[in-house]
Length: 139
Image (cartoon, rainbow, N blue to C red):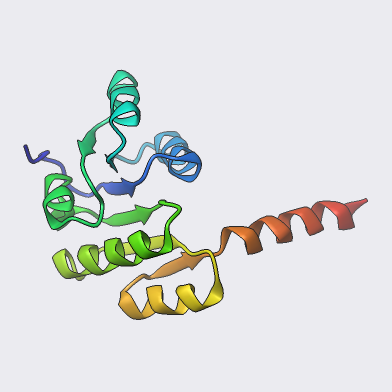
């Protein structure tokens, strides 16, 4: 069943990173839909009262259920470079205008994600190391 929503963010994956993205979106009053394929997480998301599509974010069907055509952005927060890449390709194909942000576990994959259509790619390990160093250097 397709959710009728527009000008929203699709959050692909509700792990540690996905949860933080959702917290930030809530804090800023931005509407969102989560795409998650783990049945236990889906139930938890429903209990929290959030919009959720029970499906795979690499699937056109799941992204269409999340109203990709009218989404302003897609946040791909899965911890699997191959799935992230397929999700970027699928999202870009379905909505050439939406902003796509994702994560990558190494620089080579980051380049491939950009080539596939990602607008922004973060390297969590690199970000974490910068934050740790910034705190150490403050002392």
